[in-house]
Length: 184
Image 1 (tube, rainbow, N blue to C red):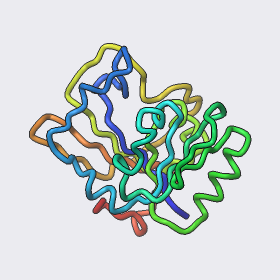
Image 2 (cartoon, rainbow, N blue to C red):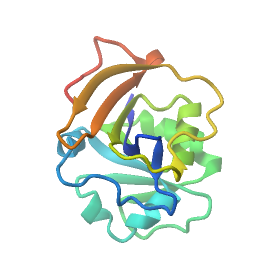
Image 3 (tube, rainbow, N blue to C red):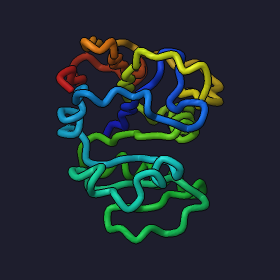
């Protein structure tokens, strides 16, 4: 079974967007492990709002990605061979089929409501959170509408000279020391 890996930037106070939807607080001065991460991933799960920011530039933003699944009930069919729209009605069946198909890990790109839906269904195996050294004081929180406790196990941390700290967690029910590769 393929793994869904949440890998994203978050402020120290837990926001993934600033108060006006901005991302200008994200550090972009170095790679922060993304090139290595891309070698383990071939698919993206992304929400409509996040997708609309990169629409038309899929190949530029995600050149090595083979398939992009956009989760939306309002997005019209997309005219790009890499992109497929998943609706709420087909969510569970389609995601289970994707997870059981051949391929590498799946990058959970965002947004917050999609992340919450996957967490509630226990469909995220790993979380790589790049905590940026900034307090935004408001914006879109990473975790929304989570109704039950989720136990995590910290398996790795990386600290960068910029103050960014990358936290790598696996969900405890999914964790198996023999199967987990900490070299991501």
